[in-house]
Amino acid sequence: MFDLDGTLVDSRRDIADALNIALEATGREPLALETVLTMIGDGARALVARAIRLRTPAESSPEHDALLERVLALFLQHYAERPAVHTALLPGAREALSLGLPAALVTNKPRAITLLVLETLGIASAFGAVFAGGDGPLKPSPHGLEQVARELGVPASRAWMIGDGPQDVLAGRAAGCFTIAVPGMIADRERVLAAEPHLIVESLHDVARLASASRTSA
Image (cartoon, rainbow, N blue to C red; front, side, top):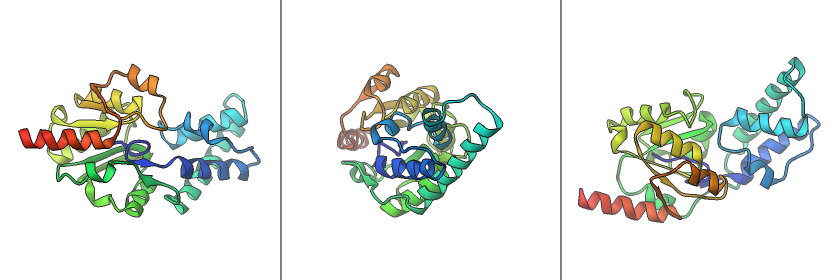
């Protein structure tokens, strides 16, 4: 099981661009890429809510809630129009997805945009199951991992959850998976380590080697 953003793909620029277009369309100042990165990982609604809190600090109110819905709609619209202008596969991603082993994607990214990214990058066929934002409880809930494990016919206890964020590790542990952290350019490394992954690797090349060795010894 793989996470998407920061694990398989570098999508930082496209996420930040779509968010800033949405903010500017509602009269808010754009955010620096480094700031946006601290907000990614818990789904589109959480991302937008965090951005609005920085640009419009206010308690919940009908006006604030309406702004959230407006910025969220604009973000999703612009992101769907340009889902992978700058997004690219990370080193080792294609290798890790080309081993012929059952693979699933579990991401907090909205499903429609997730599918657009997969199609654009030519990796949609690599996954036997996809669980994305809108399909049910998001990570760190284990729900998505348990669902794709059932779809693949593989016990979660025999699956690997591979991701770059604490949400991935926590979800994997809760589902009973072996968790592999690939600290990357989005999630804070210390937060990932604090979630206590079973294994930490530096790239997906390492994951591919481990998977290949595991298949050979099975």
